Picture 1 (cartoon, rainbow, N blue to C red):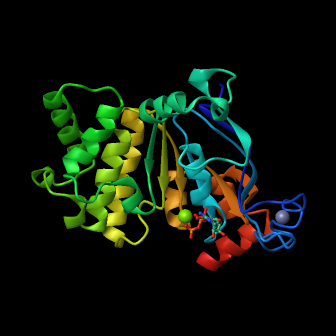
Picture 2 (tube, rainbow, N blue to C red):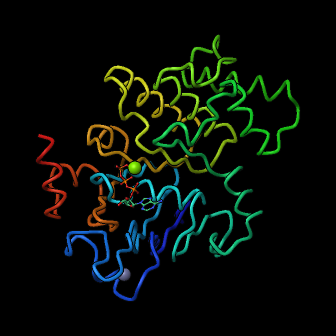
Length: 275
Ligand SMILES: Nc1ncnc2c1ncn2[C@@H]1O[C@H](COP(=O)(O)OP(=O)(O)OP(=O)(O)O)[C@@H](O)[C@H]1O
Ligand SMILES: [Mg+2]
Ligand SMILES: [Zn+2]
């Protein structure tokens, strides 16, 4: 079966770049900063496929490029080079599309939960309004129906719906993440990007959110890319996992295999340090 999303050689540099950037960075060079020009190579040559109904995990230490990768996939930041293919747009590299087309794909086919809730939510607008906004962008016009749908999505994420008129700034971290998830799922997207959505939450809230995500994944038939440096999250959610270091994917495979029998020395280090 063809993948829902196909990434080819996604590369993102922060800096002016030079011909040596790629060869002077990466796991072997033990840095993501180019020694010649000082450019940060946040992601380099990342190629991955995401399949239907799949949850793909991405793990790696802080600064390995996980958030940058997700942001490029959601068109929040531009890539320096690379290609993205989406099954509904056969054979057209999404990155060559017009801003209008990209917005349409993002609004209708994608959802994202940001590591930093301030990026995903308007903190002063009501929580219900935050969900409704994404629906309006996806073409919903009827205010009544939009509000009903927002309420039912918030209920679905186990948000206390009695508080949907309150703004996210009043809410706990876990509640804010539920609003982000409801918003991300609202347009019934094909793919969902989740960046450290349970980091910083206490263990019981974390466990409930992860459970909720697993059941939503089945109900909505959405494919997900889940970024986490927490191996427990990866183990629970992801069927396959990519391990990133200094912007590169150093290992990709079935999560069980990666966690039980890691091949790359860096993955071995990551896994062993969690034991
Ligand atoms: N706007 C920016 N300007 C300059 N450098 C940036 C920018 N955004 C990210 N970087 C750099 O790119 C690299 C990757 O950052 P990124 O946020 O993607 O890492 P991450 O894997 O998500 O880390 P964490 O686990 O801490 O969230 C880091 O070295 C970071 O400093
Ligand atoms: Mg990050
Ligand atoms: Zn360079």
